[in-house]
Image 1: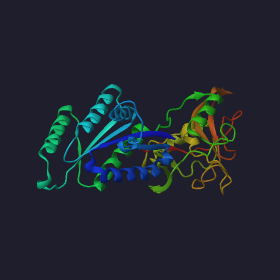
Image 2: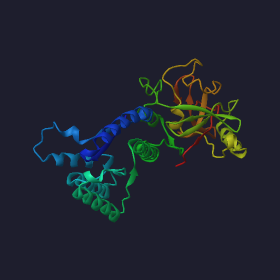
Image 3: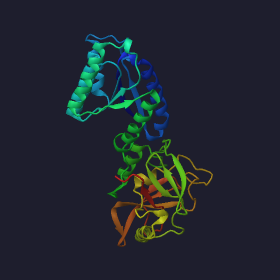
Length: 336
């Protein structure tokens, strides 16, 4: 599980919004568990009981420098400490390109009689400062709108930044590299990583142009629900993929064979009702599938040797001699 820290800065007048934002992050974590990411929200209340030999604000600033996302909420005023927190985050970003900074201005009705001129001037000065820096804040009217807008930003970060993309380009490697890969991504494998609980996929079946596919929302990959009906040599498998693209299978022409990393996301940690180590949402005929990766000693009898995922035995391997395997094509929903 990869922790990502979010520092939330705001004045005391937005305490209800902070509390609702914290609830939102907790709920978001439930959605992101399968992506292998845990969001840790840091708010200034977390430091109140801490014993420190330095100024407490210095502790805040240290946490800001170590966070991955900095979120600032402001309404009718911007206090000097809140502004200092922004400056800390902005300075750290210029140096390290981290944290990602999001500022949200609550734009709602206020009582003119209760408005403080000094507070409003601090707000206007800060807004002008953001404009000078070229940093544009986002306006929200209520907590639901804030959650909706930040949720969109989180999802973009999830796809592009936070979650390690699986390798999609084929490589040539040996057994030790396969074992390291299984442990890195916690792929279940009866040989390399038998104590694993398996990759946390999130499968969703769909029909595309009369073709059944399985979308994995955890990896942004689209799989054929079935695949080739007969096993074939590796070179024939590559021709099979070409034919799928020529006929625009399911309405797409960017199908390919999966890398070993991608194919191993389908491996489950125990045999299912289909007696295979793969979710029964997939066709059970494709017990072994080719990948685009090659074994380090790449040829036997002038034929290429590809890595294979064996759902019958629950492991990845390379075939002994000249053997035939099935093809299950994949495509990236959000191409790199």
